[in-house]
Length: 469
Image (tube, rainbow, N blue to C red; front, top):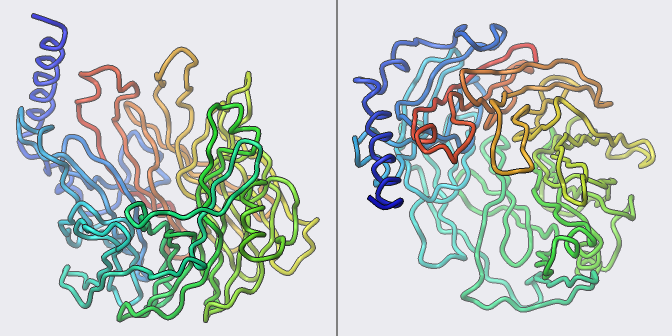
């Protein structure tokens, strides 16, 4: 028996073992009427199981005005030895404010974002596969999954309106033309604002827009150019301030849209080429905070210093104040390791020298997955910690999920860990009613994907609520 045959046999045996562990794959989930205390998880967090598969994942969640949650997730159905030869099922699970499962919708493979409105209706970006990759399908759904309205969304842009650039290792930028076959539309983020939807969209540049309840476009405004970085080595990349990725989007009480995007030196040069001006604020590596009126007119653009972060995970703007969360990695031996959290805050109309910029630390290694408001003047990070990446290979210890709350100065206000029998991580989180936190986490997950049998064994998806983060 050769090595490949032995590996395949092991995978099938492990898969069969995993699939036969439970006669009723939904038995544990269905036995829980709602949120409750479940060992070994912190008793302050009310949690419940939401998956039925033996291997599952979480994409995102949206919290409704009534405190109910729409959780977008995937899971492999128990098909015995054939389980991994079929694609995972895509689900949109509706869970009430008390943790009771209210319903579940089957989703196609190409849903990218979803939001829930005060009416209970949902706006969903992406649906079936499009032949034209410059088009995104958008649907408005009732809670039962029936379609209110739908459209195919794209942009017909003139050459002058296409904001595509190429940056070289020396930091210089050149405007470029992207061929029609290479144009690809991506919905980066979306937020509900009443019955409207505000969204961040990438196609020949980054733009922010607003759709009404009928999915008609109210407005669409440019935020920043798209810049492709052409380098050959890690050293060339770090020399120009990369990697620095991610986006943030929020809508304040007045209906103004706010967008956070990375701003390295080469991105700044492309920005000046497009808009004819430098953003106010920091002149070094930063994030760009762009604000727009309720009707889409640009209000301001300011740069906030960001020397080390690598990925934006969330933006909050309330009562004229902003806060941003990102992942940050300290350089060790020329490589980015020892991940921590980056926090920045300030007043939109305040002096820029009064902005707060600081690194936060939960454990040796912290990977945030979400940053959001969790009460008046209070902000929360959620993510994965204590997984201890090893220099010798892709191995991890049994990590923990975490929920960290801070005030407007970044001072810790609360910290909750979620630890299970095996690796546990918070995969998605958001603000619930009255400053509570709603979060989805994966637990009982193998810490080392190289261990085939561990990889194929069951993991679990849970949903939780923390009233006082």
